[in-house]
Length: 158
Image 1 (cartoon, helix red, strand yellow):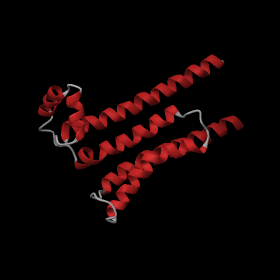
Image 2 (cartoon, rainbow, N blue to C red):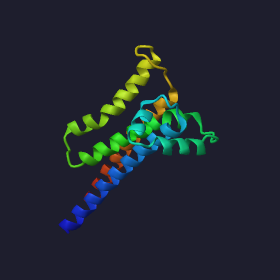
Image 3 (tube, rainbow, N blue to C red):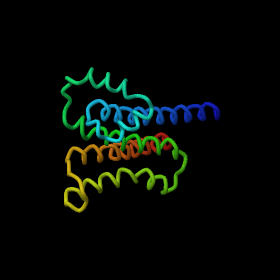
Image 4 (tube, rainbow, N blue to C red):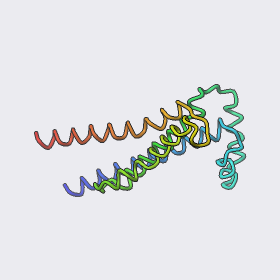
């Protein structure tokens, strides 16, 4: 029984890592395929020898008309979600408050920066879609955590 629960936990952790990396890759692909080539990610892709492949893929999707929010805001939301999921996978056994502080760092920084842009306190352009994409991952994460905790408590008490 102990081995079974250990295997279940390990599979669950590796699933989180896979999902986190998947979100990260999806965000990068949106940047690489649909955004300006002046971004740093193109320098990195060139360093990995991926320029030719990316150019071919960009040519293939050049006629795709994707919504503004997908092109400009969704990648950042995916990066935020990837961070949350990967930190949760790494720190899953730690029940201390520090886990949630570290997990919340990127969402707090991104949300704060967007709000500060709105008030003109830092350089940048406020975008309501960016703010929504930054808010959704932590809201979804903490809602699921709360639901799981409630479900676990009700199962234990039954």
